[in-house]
Image (tube, rainbow, N blue to C red; front, side, top):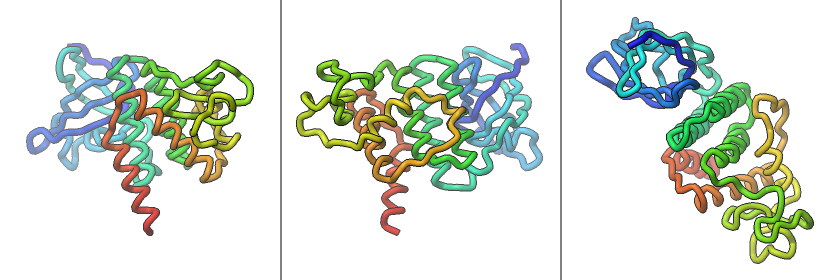
Length: 248
C-alpha cells in the first residue's frame, strides 16, 4: 500500500475496539473510502478531532482499493464550528452529506463532492440551511438521472404561460396542461430554475419568504418521492425537528 493524501469529509464513524474507530470518508479523488483510525478514540490521539462526522480535511492514508485503508493523520481544512453547535444546521448538514454519499454510490462524480462542500461552507457561513439544502437537492437530480423539466411545460413542451410546478408530473406546467395542481407563486417558479443552475459557491444573498420556501420544498419533496426512490433517515429527522419547532 502507498501513502497518499486525499481531500474528504467524514460521513460516518463506527467504534472499533476500545480505542479505535472505522470511518467512511467521502473523498474528492476516490469517492467513498473506508479507513481504520487506530487509537482515534484516545483523548491525546492526533486523529481524534479529524475523525468525527463532518470533519473536512486532507487525510493521509495507506490506500487500499479493495478494503480498509489505514489513516495516519488528518490536516483539518474546516471544522464547521458554526454548524456543529446548532442542531438545525447539523440536521440539514447530515442530510445533504448522506444524500451526496448515496448519489456518489450511484455514480462517482467529482462535482458531487464539490457541490456538497460548497453547500456546507455556505451553511457554516450562516446562509439559510433549508434553502441551501433545496439547491443541493435539485442539483443532485442530474447525477441520479432524473432531471426535472424546468425549461418548458413537462406535459406539452410549451415555454409560454407556465403557471405552476408539479413534482408528481415532472416539473413546469403551463396554463393549458395544469389540472388540479396547486398554483405556486411566480417567485417559486423562477427560483426553481435559478437554483438548478446557480453556482452555490458564488451565492452572496438569500432573501426568500416563508411561503415561497414552503412551495419550493413541497415540489422537491414530491419530486424525490416520485422519481428517486431515496428514503433517507436524516431527512425524517429534519421533518421531526420542524414539527417540534412548530409546537413550541
